[in-house]
Length: 336
Image (cartoon, helix red, strand yellow):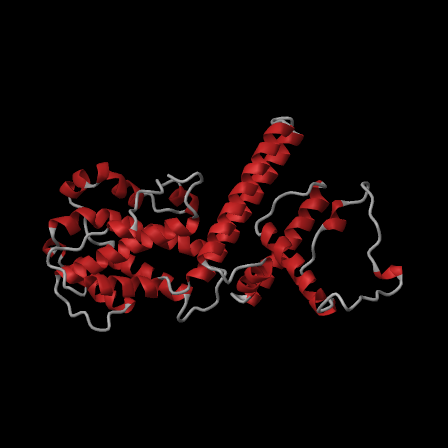
């Protein structure tokens, strides 16, 4: 086990990989041809399983409840970040549509009593019946419930090309890993910010001490650094904050702007109504992109080397100093 819980993306990838592997095993069992295998071709497999589930091998039948639960987990986790992307035809929304289609096809397949007994104590059946109305329910699932890709075992009747087909399918399913992982990183950082706000509020209410708050903040920083470092090791192109900024702003600029404006207005409403700077959804995203946009505007003013100098206008160009008595609204970032 790692020091910190598995990232949201790792959970998503494990669930998706397990489900796709199960479909591919079912396809190989039925001795389909293996030429030009693509994700869309799995529709036929799902339909055949739904029509004749009794033809599956005992191993496939045993894993079916977990496979269907894995598909539901993958859908829920992907839905949570799908709003970041506008490429509905061939991107993230498209693959989300494929997952939903496969799940709808397989929902009609009954779970036999024997499968309920053989399935890890019935855990997968319980997971499936939970519906996952909130993605936090998915996070309550043991992170090791869906195994790593390296532990998958092909059916005895599988073709020699099975491993090649599996790798091709997984490559297609995770073709845009970097964009998706960066978005998941921001989702996790947002949740860390929310927890820090919660601890800060508890300190103000004298429910926690400053020492406890300091420990909580230090832990949040360690987790954030670990998540970012892991991502940078996997993708060397993500060297600076600007690289992360570019990935986010190129995902769905219009939708992103709308979310930033909504977060900004929610922050102002909270300040005006309660006089307290409270956490609102997308707050971290708003701050990061607002600061990034501001710094980006100064890039053209920065000298290319030390032989140049910067000449600033009269001091009135600079922002005025603020005092501790001023409203917190003077410190908020405006995306407009």
